[in-house]
Image (cartoon, rainbow, N blue to C red; front, side, top):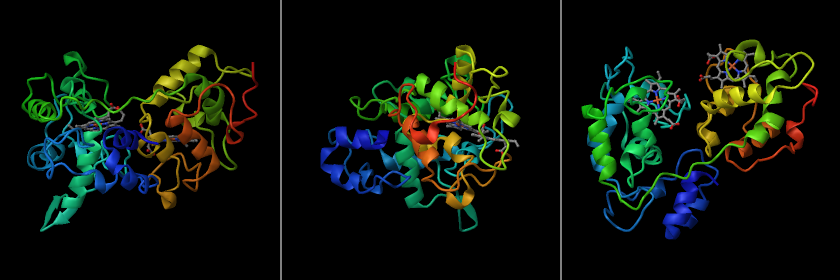
Length: 302
Ligand code: HEC
Ligand code: HEC
């Protein structure tokens, strides 16, 4: 169950039947969008946030160029389409009357994804606000760079005030914790065990998540920690469908990224190895007992 579905079950029981039928889809169920129709009614999956206000004031910020504070001129949407698979999961733009825009349906989907990243009970802790905010102003590390150098930035304020207008009882989506033991024992070996005719990940990603193990022995715990931290930026915990680690090496014909210089490791979404990894990303696979698809010969076990 992903975090959206948890929220639906926990907060909007009457909707749960609808949501169950949507469990396999990779985008949130359109049925969860009740915002405009039911403002102020108990706690809803929209966290009490107004959709029309979102379309008029928040979405334009995602399209804005030149918002970048430290040298980045890139609009959020350039990196955050569902194809690129970073959290936020904006829909690709559609050309409408010669203008690049979102359709009503796409905006609804964007809204659902955006709502997952906000916390009306403590707006300033929202992932949507922390990622683009400079770390010097209390923001999080963000591959997309800094957009707001302080919490006084007008765009920051617009988004923060919108979040604060939501239901004060609606919190952040539950944070799923990735299990380190499972990573060290069952995931990390992937990086040195290529499929046939492929190069191992360590050939190209050694400076990042695919740290090479010492000769003829297993990674030290410190090496595993570093690798784990680095890989965590390629994972949206709880949501395999927005985790680049599961997306980049997936063949485009199976819904993977259009480009990966490293070739492909999985040719179907249901590849057993990929499914086993998705269970880990969901927070379900823990400990040092590896399922069959994640048992590898290298490197030698301690
Ligand atoms: C140059 C590409 C790029 C741009 C531009 C960009 N981002 Fe990102 N963003 C990323 C990548 C890659 C990630 C995932 C890795 C990470 O968290 O650094 C990410 C992560 C995020 C996250 C999730 C952070 C978390 O808690 O996991 C949010 C929210 C976000 N970005 C919001 C934005 C917003 C809002 C904008 C525009 C103001 C923006 N980004 C612009 C690339 C970008
Ligand atoms: C031949 C070199 C090569 C190999 C082997 C390779 N990659 Fe890559 N990978 C790249 C390059 C170059 C990029 C960045 C450009 C791109 O997206 O293609 C990349 C990007 C990625 C990204 C996205 C990183 C980001 O910051 O968004 C992921 C995830 C990834 N690779 C996973 C893997 C995994 C897992 C393996 C092993 C199964 C692997 N790669 C093997 C070259 C490689």
